[in-house]
Image (cartoon, rainbow, N blue to C red; front, side, top):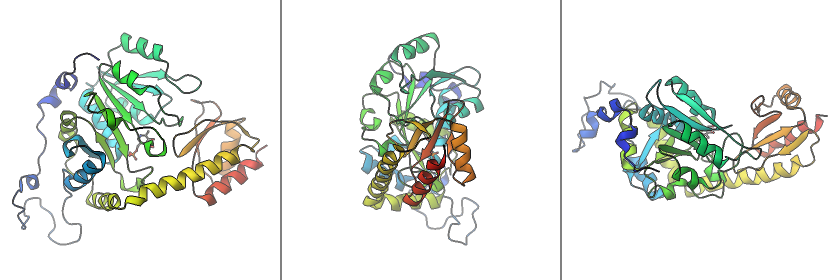
Length: 342
Ligand SMILES: Cc1ncc(COP(=O)(O)O)c(C=O)c1O
């Protein structure tokens, strides 16, 4: 990595941009009469949410061993992906890099912002080839590299993550949406070493609150300040903030969810071994399996006819279907239907 200067990576207009600051953020004396935001004086959720999500950030900071200034909260990590691209990538000029196959939203938000999407094809084991990575990054200046680990839809974790961080002259986003299901250490542990790294996590997967739409970004204070500058002022609603704060108080919730999902994952893995229509089950560090079927379309359609929706990955990954771990009842239904496909 070249010498790091955050302002040289951020778009010029964003460096100059002043954040929107709610009057409430200046309310140091906690004025009880709030006549500043044109709200209705009646009702339970009549007030705008805390725009800087102080309580939630303080809680997370304690849990993650970071300072609250190193945390940004998004309306799902999807929003944070969008904001990161907007902060660093000049429309029609800059490019992002993503693994292929990987999570589609990186490419989607880059397209919305008119940024080129450079794809690094994974090998047959869904791993990055270091030589290919070096060649691609030498050929083209790339602003942001989205590194998804464990990766969606392949399920495996990136090996030798630090090699890719050390050899990239831009922002490296480590998307850890599924980290709680893996045994790997979080990229949060290397934030001190690498000022160009942003770690994304979410409450949508292991925490079991996808409906609340809350995702988190962890990075240097400088990067987080830019995310807070460009976000919509009230991007995370009050109900969701309250829900997640109370969830964080329940020490066993995450552990329970993960233990149950991993137990079901093991059960499914054993059951898959005796299913004829399956050609290969790829290793997974997540709450889903990528499975190569003998005839992917036939299996997908059979499940659909039996009212089980899965995620067909063809044509990108031939004959493959991504199936997430469900409840035992759902998993049993899945297995019974798979057994009928000849
Ligand atoms: C790798 C990855 N990142 C991010 C997300 C988005 O998560 P969120 O619900 O926090 O927007 C997903 C959702 O499927 C995902 O698979």
